[in-house]
Length: 532
Image 1 (cartoon, one colour):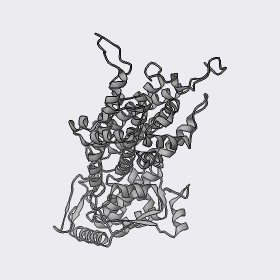
Image 2 (image 1 turned 30 degrees about the vertical axis):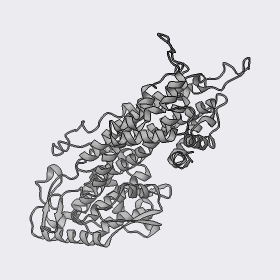
Image 3 (image 1 turned 180 degrees about the horizontal axis):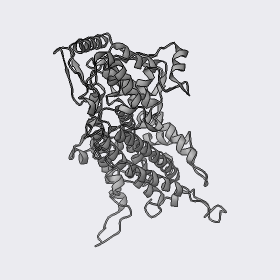
Image 4 (image 1 turned 135 degrees about the vertical axis):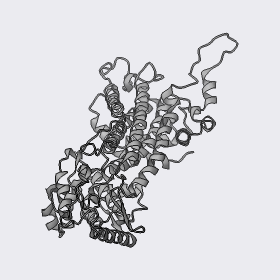
């Protein structure tokens, strides 16, 4: 097993992805983090002993903060808080999201400001180690007293309550604990609040969405290169000079990749060859060129669209790495100052804003690919390809007129794109006042993050359909005319899905290509092909 060390300060998004998607990757706290947690917990106990009210420790929660209880009731208060928040709805969060949540929450506690003993973070990591995943409903959090409701299902598992998924089955937590030799944890003052009063559930969705969106950015450039070849495009649109004059890093990176992918193509030609192939006036006052010297926007402006996604990812990545290495609960214990601070680090505004921006950028990429697909299948615009990319049948062949090729695929892609666009409106601007107007401004980060993950998934499905259509078109053009790198992509897809020689169901083909995309086969093929 690979082990990620956590200390509340150095966890990366790649670490989160690895733990979330590979049950063989586990995590453990560093010695320094354990010492920091012990010191914070000791301070908490000293402050409780003074008899002064401490929010959420010896007082009620939220609007009930003006009601103080005696220290001997503090543990019961924490248990009750967990139980009364177990009211989530909707489907259960995917396993990978729950794994990411466990890791991020443990890392936030490991920072050593939450007043909890090391065993609390350690138990979260033990659940990961045993692949015991709390059953967490997706819905119910407004993202600004943290993700209270979903994280309560995590906290409930630690105290032996509720259900968990283990080895593919949904079982009672206590039964699973008995089977692996774990016991339910008892709670101290602040323990429950430290577990649930944070942004870790929202951040888990956000991190995985960002990872998949980064893959989509590369995939969109690969799709654009294939479409440029299939449509006999002008690869001069991706010349460095153009994009250096508007030097957004993402735009330049996108143009650079598309240009590199097209190097050596005999279909998508440099601008000078396009001009030569187009013809000239030859002394006439007017002529109609044999080939357009400029492509439509969905090809020509692809770096400008995908570049926005790349640049959005750059700052989103930084924000999320800050978030997963932060103390996001309340109150926080300052061991250096020997005091406790009440604040609002549970407000997940950065997660919400980044996810709202990400889903807009991703939806625009889905729309870009859908527009390229429309050009590929439409005989009015596809520069001599067959209508809907049907096979070419000899004159008089009985099959002529019976087939519609990729007509249904383009309809499906358009539906997926419409759903992505419709889901991309910002969630963060729809704040609701709740909890007796104590939580009168909330982030709605979990909604934004879940929506972002959905939009990214939809965009991948559009890309899969695009790749199938582009490869079909390039079979009609002749794959031997492709560049070495795009030909490697074509070969990878053809090893899984054959050329469409007659009408048939294509949902399995989409699933096959999505599997190649998820496994990294498509991007790896584009990266490793010999370019000569």
